[in-house]
Image 1 (cartoon, rainbow, N blue to C red):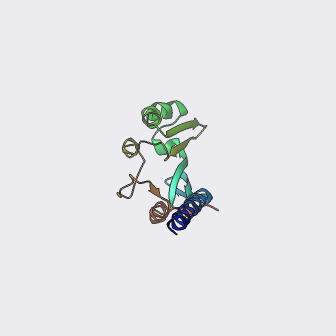
Image 2: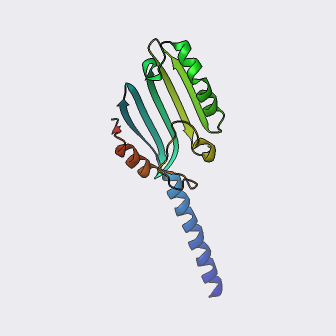
Length: 155
């Protein structure tokens, strides 16, 4: 009888482990995008998440030179070089600038699976809701924060 109970308990533990593993593997990655235009600057934020946990965030910002207080790509490069360096010096953050005729396009990617959040929170333009993000970034809370700031879902 003890042998049957032990064997049954082992089977239950194995089945439980398989169910938990299957559930975690089946969590499909979702993608949502929000956009906003303010003072001529167009911002598109895209979140990639498994369940409620954000794994990656991208931002594409189109910034007219006039919004930077400059008149040319060369002046914009000079103004933004330190910001670009500060972003690219943080593990898990990649920032790329493309200079056009009238505006600069910035593409930022934050990989939350490897990013140093303490350093990332200090970057210009990075904002949080002030909560504890040591356990990850909540998609639900991020969307609420964006909506509160006037962002609209991009279809």
